[in-house]
Image (cartoon, rainbow, N blue to C red; front, side):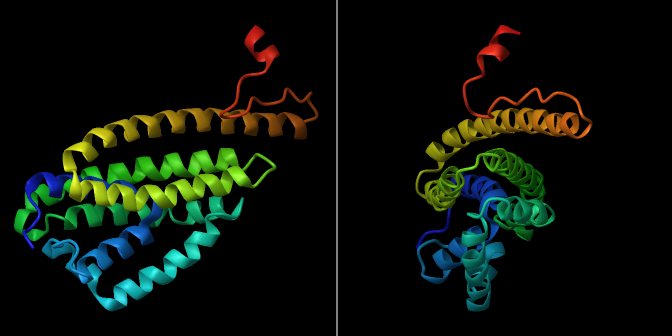
Length: 220
């Protein structure tokens, strides 16, 4: 099997960095399995992921995360704990695509991969926190399943069609920034509402994060 060319390496580095901010353990598992089964010729820096021990450990964590991420409240706590794990891991994995043989590219990949992981993680955690304010659990489970599907799709597309991936990746980054702004504004309004309630002031209510604004909000 031929080694990955430069466009594939660039796309794979971006995909691994971004996806690590969403599902780190799934990234490690899928990348390791792809190398172990011979589906993808992993770069030298990623070949350790194909070790059976790493595959088993990441598979166990994928199993735990699959259920933890679908329980409202617990998913936000899980995201909070993994803030200090996903971002540096995303940077390290992105850099490992190029390895020590290409030190300059590895440093650039680490900086960009960490930034992509941070963007994905913040977008995921703030969006899920906003979704968790809804009393029904289905939107939470639906969002989690979408994230489950995006990770393998992005990794596959990065290797199979790197130029298509890079174009779609730019759109995903723009969407992530929009989600962060939208969710953060909603959460900030929610916190302000709670502060007013506990201080004995009238409850102004809060506009849904992804719904249509109320009539009184449009008139202001």
